[in-house]
Image (cartoon, rainbow, N blue to C red; front, top):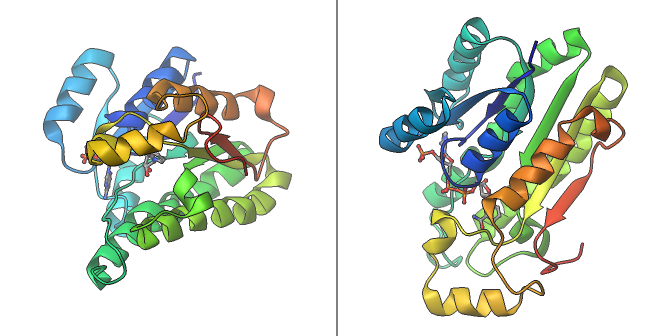
Length: 240
Ligand code: NDP
């Protein structure tokens, strides 16, 4: 039986590439999303991958969704915590709401979903968890106190949970993408983007597929001895 993989935010951007790559690697893939029904419908029509709508920052919604997915598709053995948002502002303008939204969506979601799949993975003595961090969680970024804190938190979360999972067959790793050509990055002003690309030794933005290949590898049996690690995929922009 193909292992079931849940990719949060898995119907567009980096998440869509992850979902498709996992499917190509023989997994049974389920994608989640927040509210972009049009993108979800188009994605399912194109790939055959079902999409479930729920807010990853809301524990009760995650709980109901995990129950539904496990009843309809099967136990989740691979979890990719990819859903994320930015609410950029310097400290002067950073409201409490912008802080909470980013922490709850990017970091709180990792707690919510790991918590909800953990008992099942423990009982089956198998699990693969990959959390999507960011270069900006490693290096910091102007105007991203909330985002950098959430992503940096993901890296600590990963190392701590990996210690709990190691003896019971659950690996927990993170990927820290550099700047990847998605809608999130296309929202950056062109002059700022040009300066960012100039700082990437490989001379280009990342592609969603660059990140997806890393996720696929970390969820294979070949990666069984890798846990608690952060794989930087950033074209050499930040060597951590
Ligand atoms: P996109 O903005 O393209 O897609 C974000 C995805 O997350 C969408 O599927 C969205 O659903 C989903 N999502 C957002 N909020 C919620 C929520 N509350 N509940 C459920 N789903 C939610 O992002 P990217 O593909 O660019 O980024 C993917 C991940 O990679 C993020 O964690 C991001 O921080 C990280 N990253 C991205 C980089 C980049 O350069 N793009 C660089 C480093 C890290 P919907 O479509 O319904 O809104």
